[in-house]
Length: 498
Image (cartoon, helix red, strand yellow):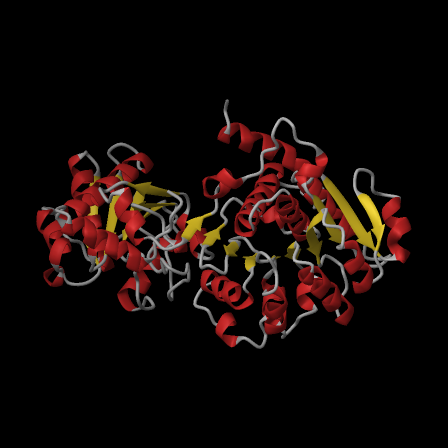
């Protein structure tokens, strides 16, 4: 279930399912049953549960869940935001089948074992206000576990944005597929673990309506992940070239180079200015070293076709000289990863970088954090004003004709063809100096082995995050490459158990 459905896509999936013969109320009954099952797992047997319903179909799911929970021996109070008489369609049918009282919000206490949030679903089209806003604040201040239906009320299912006020759920149950807002921040922080319930929307229906938006996981790219054959040798596993800054700026290049080597590149070379050679030589072993004093030297190096992937940017230096180095990389039509100083050197000149990238045999991969992204696109308001991180990354990838990895706790990988994936396995411990440099190297190492740019970027982001997640507290950037063998072994064993 890697597909992520927007609100419109989910509505279309519902409509197609209904048109194929499944009544809308049958879908609501199944959704309510899934909510009731989740609530029964969270609440003690016979416990007190408050189901707080809104005026739409999300509230209808809540009415169904309340009826089933009451029939299972729970003590259930149901409260409705809005007028019961004004409920329409399937929600009205669900309310009709609820035989218990509908409580007033003003008379409710917080003495419940569990609260079910069925106020608003993923398609909330306006900011929460009035009675609903007050109810959400009350829920968040109750100290009780909260089960959210579809998404926590107040979270935009498409963007993850908070629409005025939003429930902080303990768990969430959604239907058919997750939404982008379940993975994008701040929505993800409000959801807790998200369970996806099957309510009878077929996989082929999902395939018919789904756009190219995915959760980033091995199933998305494992078929293209490099696996060396028995007759492999180092020259067949690719040769990554990592560009270094001057004598006082060498560590970032070594981190990237180590990432590329651990990711599986057969050979890795650091290309460094003459004044940095001694510093690198004192610390490099399996990684090779070449002198490179500027764009002219780099062009000569890249005349060797064995250098098939280049990582450029970490501590390279900001300015015209770095621009010229990047131009030389892209003119050589190599697979490339650009990060950090390579991007900042093009501050406000995104279209100039796009022009250089357009000559490449395959899209370069860019790995900016939010600050670098803002600098690069400072003269492109249509990119910066995207309604979500997902949309901003997509617009950037289309403009640059590159794969854009917009880093953060909800890293988004977007390709120029419209595909996008949202990473979800990271850890806040990756917020440490040099972590991004290692990611640059990992992606370069995968590119060197022949992986395509979008898939390499997705795989690199996942591997990087997984190594950090498994290490946990105390992580520093040097630990990330050393964590890759365990991650890779587990990944390959899972994908190729024989």
